[in-house]
Length: 256
Image (cartoon, rainbow, N blue to C red):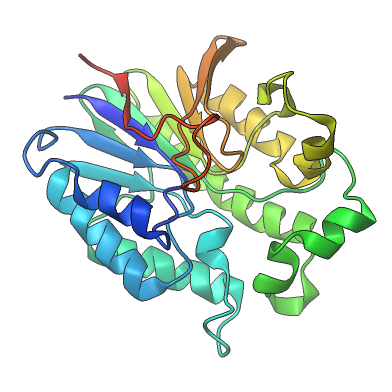
């Protein structure tokens, strides 16, 4: 059994769909895929992509990214309802969105959002960041409320894993748990995005889990770095033009 990781496959792009459709139908039958969010905001396409991946892998583990919760196509749905709908689609296909054990591992999804742990957004960022208009939350929730909602769900996941685990923990989130995962070469004009990359709450939850490996997405910057006894891996597939910062391939994070 091997564990592979990828995120940010953005299946809205034809080039990305071709890559997905080209994955072997037999090579991964005994393997697990961790998919750390950002598949598509189109639920029909989401279902089709996830069904295709489940046919190829023994298990597929998933957390939604921000793009998955956009509701621009769905005027009668808010983003909390979209989360439930996406989760229901995944569950119906046999996709894992809660902790499970396999091959001596405990694999734990960590839901999240950003809460400005990594800095306050500038006016420029507020004007251009699509989530602010493409996501609609109930009760006038702001980003911190959304983050609190999702990370509270993780508390049950942590208890579940802590009560049953026998081996190493592999956790995964879409959002970054710590900003020092961003490489030093990131140019100054891109650092304006740091406030919407994640939340320090996720890092505290990873510490409590004692994760040997944590997979994350969102930044589209592929990294592999060891910090505080945890190996952090980003293997975002990214947009078609992002060839310098993304590998455009599955990465094996456990097994041969």
